[in-house]
Length: 74
Image (cartoon, rainbow, N blue to C red; front, top):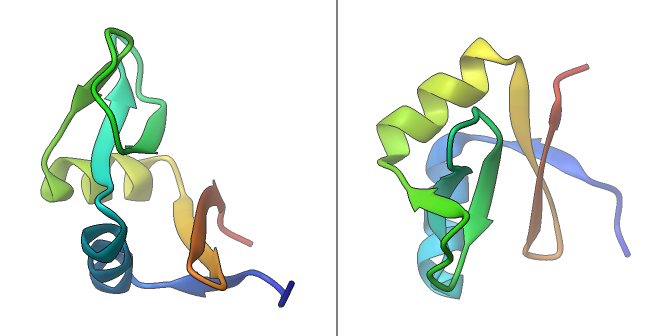
């Protein structure tokens, strides 16, 4: 698997759209996730809220082969 590389939030939106993923957070927290199915534990949020929360927590979206992960920025 190629190394993870940081991508823009716009690129993350495109990949998410292709994979049917939505921006979400764990209810009652600021923990962000990409979700595909409804869950009682997750709340779907807007991309703007997702980006704002990630930025305030110094998180970036990293990608490798279409697989995305939120990680602390280096």
